[in-house]
Amino acid sequence: MTLIPRLDLAALDRQGLDPSTKGLPFDAPPLTVGDVGVQGWNVLAGDLPLPLAVIREDVVRANSAWMSAFTAANDLVIAPHGKTTMSPQLFDLQVADGAWAVTVATVQQLGVCVRFGVKRVLIANQPVGEQAIDACFRALRQEGFELYCLADGLPGLALLAEGAKRNSPPAGNPLRVLVEIGFLGGRTGARTREQAMEVARAVTETPGLVLGGFECFEGLLPTPEAADGLIDDVAALTETALGEDLFPADQPVVLSAGGSAFFDRVGKRFSRVTFNRPVVKVLRSGCYLTHDSISYAAAFERIISDTSLKLPEGRLEAALEVWAHVQSRPEGGRTMLTMGKRDVSFDAGMPVPLRWFRPGAMQRPETMPEGHRVSALNDQHCHLETPADSPLEAGDMVAFGIGHPCTTFDKWQMLVLVDEDYRVTRALKTFF
Image (cartoon, rainbow, N blue to C red):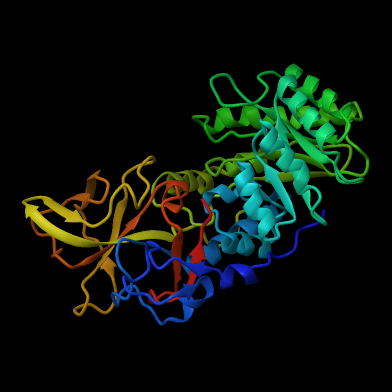
């Protein structure tokens, strides 16, 4: 199994930042991405305006190392879903920790990967439309680049076949197709094993394409047991296709599943099957890198209590925070803060107040006392239910934990990486 090289980030460090970028000071001088980490800025010192999205460097590095150890101990590899962060600098951290590929969902995201030197990409989606399909085949012309994409039915496969006719891939570098397995009421994916095998056989007869394997996305299913059934379909179909000798001898056999909520079940179910040739068992979780304070935190507690897989020392922790100022306490029981729907995710639960800090009066942030709860978000305001004895005053700073990292990242063109004292060490550029 061949891993991929580190990314080329030199051009990104030289990229200029628009002075109007959210998170930069009002009168910031012209800066490049690489300049931000050497300005001597500190979040707690008020050097940057709030709201501000920050990532704690020690935690995100520990999370990346934890997942690397988990996959290595359980005969898995990771192709982390890049759509979570869309940050090449974070892709590079994941690649440094042994990522087999980077997963994306769209051709725009594929373009970001190609631009910064990701050498193996998995599009966890079926490309449609000539623009998207032709882009996939053009990407194959990049030296040393491999691309996987999905197909879930014969009509979609026919579109890929037409694309291969328009854009003949380089010799020895076909478009690798993973047949997608779905479930009733779910998203895309063949609804039966018979349909999936029909697609797999058709791939092998299509010039310019090769069968790469089978995959599913189990993250939308309600229980671990429901996820098990879908994951088992992937393993069973791989066995069937191996029995029919559908895989090229010179290409790896890939079986993959994708979510961050059930990644333990992927390893457990795949490990139950013995295959007649080596296979690459690919986990596509993305949210593990920054984790969260709500839904994935709960899912992880289930994993560590339920799983029979080998777990590394330590645990995943929330690395992503959004900081805001206390703006006012206009009425009893309600505090308003300078953070809203434009700044923080709310689709998987309201943000959670974690810590508070009073500039000039405190040395370190303190844990938020009990009884504080976000009840509503407007575009630019946060409504915090507040007990009568709350210490919060106008001008205080509050750190919020988030749920579902994807929909916080996409609200920021730039996040800042901070050390344990909230000194800014780097700007993290995103490409949404």
